Amino acid sequence: MPEDPLYNILRSKRETTRFQVLVEVAEHQPSIRQQEIAEKLCVTPQAISEYVRDLADDGFISAEGRGRYYVTHKGVEWILNNAELLETYARHVRRDIIHQIVTWAAIADCDLKKGDAVGVYMKGGWLYAGKQPQSAMGMVAADAGAGDDVGVARLAGIIDHTEGKIEVVKVPRIEKGGSKMISIPKLLEMIKSTELVAAVGLESYLAIKNAGIKPDMYFGAREGTIEAAFHGMHCLILIVDEEFTDFLKRLETAGLSYNIHDLVKN
Image (cartoon, rainbow, N blue to C red; front, side, top):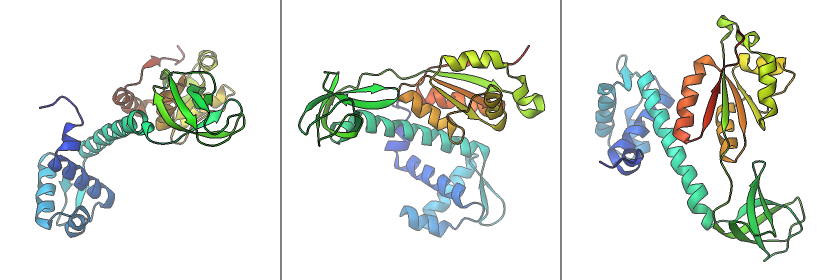
């Protein structure tokens, strides 16, 4: 069996269908019409019935009466793990493969003319194009002034940038003291050395606000922080304790480096 964790979900028709069926159950629970799932996935109702029974045997689905199904906690974790693997694979396709055949959008760091050879590089999380040679080179698709968005075609080479690091701070839930438990002086020191500040959970948001800072991200902060790190940003994220472990698992799946910090007052 190949060690590639994507092997099952991408190359096994059975595992792909199991994943799709479980997602359909999650989307429409508790009243699931197997006929509708069968039509949507282009398989027979008998096959859907077998998949549902198989998923129930694995503990991914619980049945409560005829035609009433729920995705279990174990099933949710299985969906999330496979979704994250697919997301990582899709990012690889976008970043490492498709960029060879598409036109990339970048910020022109000077006036550029159609047909100019340009170097493409990352700065502050943004993609720039300029006349200085870089490890990735392309051709300007249309005239652009300095500061404008510019299309870069025929991109070749690897864009030279280092993925950012994520500093993670666990914030106690309100039952354990909430935002008031975070040391403001320590938090301000960390903020000084990072480029982006994010909060997950109300307690985290207020801890940052208590430091006189407005977080750069709140809604969608988990994935936003990961995306920023992929673009080379040094990020700080405060996250409530019940979300902490799952977020670390997500960072491990994404392959990003991180540090954990304890800012709780003694």
